Structures are given as C-alpha cells and as structure tokens.
Image (cartoon, rainbow, N blue to C red; front, side, top):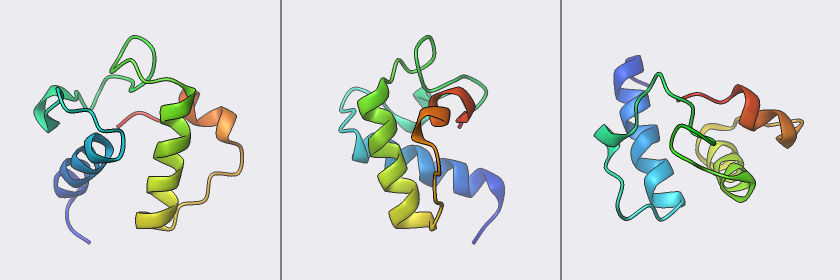
Length: 74
C-alpha cells in the first residue's frame, strides 16, 4: 500500500475532497494536530463524512462514531 508518508498524504487529499475544503491544501493539515475543534476545526457532520471515506476506501469499520472525534488524529 505504500509507506506511511504516502498514505497520510493520500488521506489528506481524500479528506479535503470528501469535505469539500476548497481553501485547504494537504500541507495545511498538520499530521500532529487534531482534525476536530482546535485543529482543522471539523465538526460531527465532518466526522460522519470521514467515516464514510474510511469505510469506502480503506475497509475500516468504525463501531462507535462518537469516539472518532476523540481518537482520530491524522
């Protein structure tokens, strides 16, 4: 599948596309910062969109969507 940097880069692009973040570039997303609240400022609707992205493209199943905001750091 590729090394971690390639996967993170691809995931950043996919998140930007999925959430239609027209003002955001992949390099604007800090891999060490949270995506929600203070980080990129995403909300619960965005979390659901990310779940769809992960399930569709990576086969990841999120059992409890409420935990995604607490645990997902890109």
